[in-house]
Length: 193
Image 1 (spheres, one colour):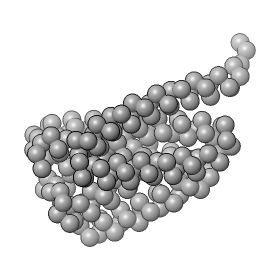
Image 2 (cartoon, helix red, strand yellow):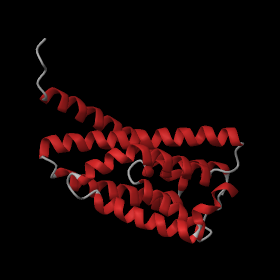
Image 3 (cartoon, helix red, strand yellow):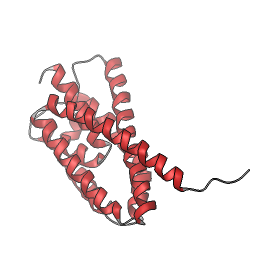
Image 4 (cartoon, one colour):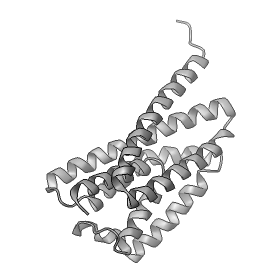
């Protein structure tokens, strides 16, 4: 895989990690395990049988738990720490033609990207909780699943296309999150001073 494809794959995977961190790690683990991608030596462990099994369990829990009211909020809270770490690991595992300093810098950018996606999705989720009493969160969870599965699939098949779609998705999600935030803020009465 050439350098441009590695960067595109890394960006697309960090974007999906912002929605489903363990699922994105599981996909990378399986890709390494089956020889579809070749990580830097420091990330060979990601393709091990043990890592794949553990990530499969956590990915399943992540997807299922996100459909349960109240549990989904606890999961979103934990995700603010988990998903950026997952994104950094994904960058380290997929980009290996760069110097160590460049790799660490890209890992930080990947973590920030996942954090932005996760924060924007959490904002939309909070708006859904307020306006639908949480019932809309299950629908949003399924939408996130479809976007994550689709993003991962396209990322491995056509990394550059996936990266372009990821940029469009991130910008759109950010705009929607801002709109939701402003709408919710307008609904909440201001305290008089």
